[in-house]
Image (cartoon, rainbow, N blue to C red; front, top):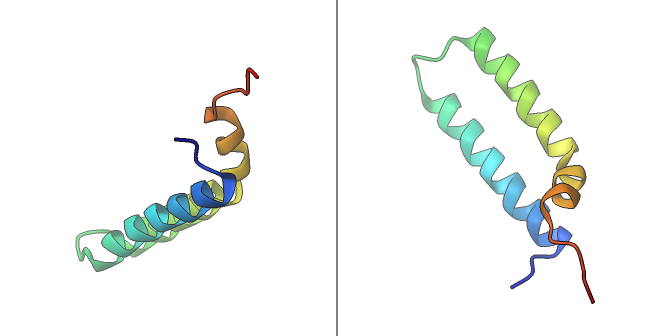
Length: 61
């Protein structure tokens, strides 16, 4: 089953949002570290098309 780029972006964004939510609810995480991690996650989301291109199987037809 192939995953389209739109499906990948939606799933990937959902996973990053879930991770951010779990971190926000954890009182043991320092707010400064939370902010840094949130910035990293935002950059990962920005580069999701690059990640999709890197992990997709090449079309050999």
